[in-house]
Length: 137
Image 1: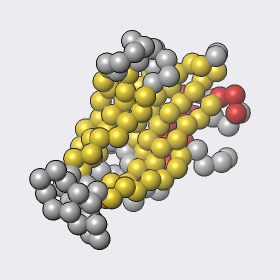
Image 2: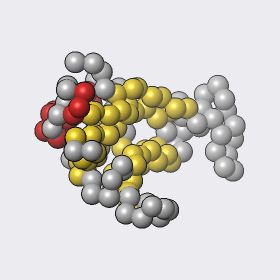
Image 3: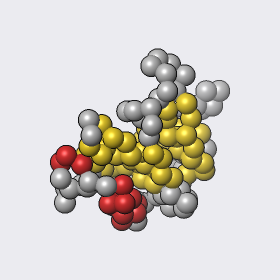
Image 4: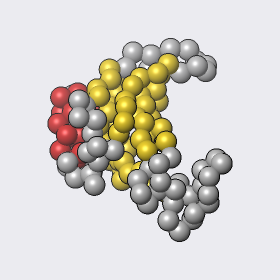
């Protein structure tokens, strides 16, 4: 099976009212990352250990999943929040993180589409995410 998620590490080098430190980054900065739903009736899955969050929806009659995974202990909170813009009825899945001692946050983000034939159902998507999340550091 192809890898469905892309690993991302972001370094924060400036903080409002704080020092700029491009070489080391700024520790302790609050960061929010998220997913945007594609329909107005998504199914949210927030892992109880906060290592993944996912959205599973039906697009043109096919299952479609978006997800993010995180290193254990990296996420402070996860929640869904309504989208305030147009069109109405859409939402976000949000994860709240804080930069580490190097000023970094790490996560992976990606998708699965049932029509591609590899992951067709939400339980398969959840199992994939659980396995992937164990590789996050």
